[in-house]
Amino acid sequence: MVSGAKNSALKLMAASLLAEGRTVLANVPRIADVFTMTDVLRHVGASVDFLGDVMAIEVPGQLNSEAPYELVHRMRASVNVLGPLLARQGHARVAMPGGCNIGSRPLDLHEEALGRMGASFHFDHGYLEGVTSGLTGRRIVLEFPSRGATENVLTAATLARGRTVIDNAAREPDIVDLARFLCQMGAQVSGAGTSTIEIEGVEAMTPATYRVPSDPIEAGSLALAALATRGEVELLGARAAELDVFLSKLAASGARWRSTVAGVEVGIDHRPNAVDFATLPYPGFPTDLQAQMIAYLCTADGTSIVTENVFESRFAHVAELGRMGADVRVEGHQAVVRGVPRLEGAPVTAHDLRGGVALVIAALGAEGDSVVHDIHHVERGYEDLPDKLRRLGAEVEAEVEAWSDAVDPSFDPL
Image (cartoon, rainbow, N blue to C red; front, side):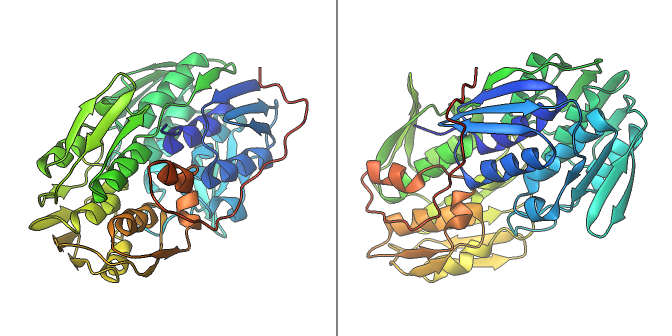
């Protein structure tokens, strides 16, 4: 069963700050990034209970406006509290974000867009601080369809005066999901999933109960894990519509796939064909599956050309794949992958979330044992990955930090 979507859950948690009262989220993945966002919400004044996959967030009338460095540096998604805090409090002080080391991801677009709506910003010792006496709807044209900027403008605009129009908006499924959640809270949002989103500001929002959808990136990663071992898997809960371009590239590689009543089934029983692809904002090939796809293509028949158009430093995993016998050369923002008959097990080190999963995928298809160090990167975004792989027949042992959270014994999310 594919877990709840990391990228959706984090944005919904941040958006819960827009409404005073008790919001309940179901199907929330128990991953490190979710626990980090839990700490961020608690720091700004919310109470969070998390039992199983159900999270209850109690938001008070007044919030603390600062998201501190010691939390934000762990995960870039922490910056998603910027829009809600500005809208609710008129003030936000957010540390410059961290997360995976995959290139520059500045906040310029966030600052410019929210500035047009009436916020003023300055940098202060590593913090971006914004203040406003009230946000006003504007037409915002994003230079790039940034997910983060789209999300912060979208959440801030729900409580702004008048109408906000976001042109060149991001179109990812988690943007659509965020808009649905906001509408359930009382917002007036239309156009999510297209390049133009319109938001009519409302006076106040109300708490909501909402289910996080399944994670398309986890689904794609598990699909590639099966294909790397020349196996097959049915991904329960996966939605083919969110993986169109990815699935078309799998088909071009010689893999088979089909939608089922319960999800998506993929399989292959021979060496894959080489495939060229380029990452692009949704609905293009997702940058979050680039590293995993390269791991799969390392043993393809022929040479694949992979072009990374979203982040400039997302090939850190390539050198580690070379330790396993892969023939991959990086030239600027392209990787040339010359397929070899097989990979060999080796000790390797994960440098980021998706690159770490790519090394796990490569290890599954390699001959002999592999040890993937710094696997804590993977725990940021994948729930119980070792257990899921074991249930698929892999021999996996993991030494990872056991994430836990104190829960009131009387916890009742409803």
